[in-house]
Structure formats: C-alpha cells, structure tokens
Image 1 (cartoon, rainbow, N blue to C red):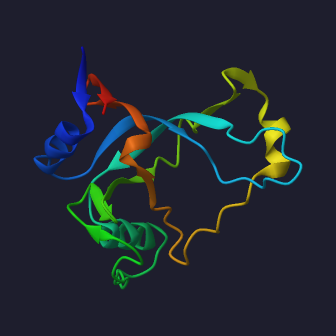
Image 2 (image 1 turned 135 degrees about the vertical axis):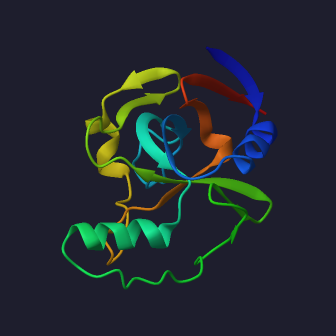
Length: 164
C-alpha cells in the first residue's frame, strides 16, 4: 500500500508512534563538496537504506555495551545542537531533522549519484567530497537527515511518499 503525505503530516504521524521500529528510508541530499576544480558542483546523492527510527539513544548504547560484555553505564549528553522534539525528530533553527540508527546487518545503503539529471559514478565525485567525522566513542552511529531531504519511507508494510 502506498500513500502521499506532507512532511508536516508525517511529523505528526511520527509523534504518535511508540518505541523503535525498522523502516526503509529514501533520501536525496547534496553532500558538502570542495568547489575548487570540481566539475560536479550540485551533485546529488540518492540513498536507500534500512534504519531504525525511535528509541532511546542511551538505551541503544547501553544495550550494545551489554552485548559486548560490558556494563550498562552510558549516560547520554544533551544534544550538541537543536532540541529533541520526540524520539524521532530534532528541531533546529526552524528546520526538522529525522533521527535514525543505521541497521548494522543486512542491506547497506544503496547510492545513486546524479549531476544535472544524469547518473554519474561515485568515483567521479568522490575526490571532491569531504570525509565524515568518525563514530562517537560509544560506537553507535546516531545520524540525522533533514526531513526536507526524505523522499520516501517504507514503514509497517506501507510506503509513504513525502511532499512539501
């Protein structure tokens, strides 16, 4: 089943959800890239990945530590930026961000790169991209993506296409 939903309605939909659950997430972003000598300025990355939405960051880290034979001693700091709206969304400077945890096993993100509407190999644009910061010391990858960059969410057997 498929439906179309505005991002505002999707944010309200998420606010009514409980716990953590897996979803398929389709995003389109324009990664930060060097401009000097870059023939691919404005290249876009379309990524389809499996992630978990919701849940408590502190609980997820403590569960990972326990699985690795450690103790449940992690206490999360407050957010370094923005304000948690709920377990799914962070607000910052009038913009909403979807918080997610990548699924470690199974399907890794599938990327497609485009520039001026034409598909390009990642090897072409890779030399111009900035590298991302390493994972935190707890080893749990907590990520965010601007809700305006989320195009589609497959959730609980349903596909939701997001619009403005």
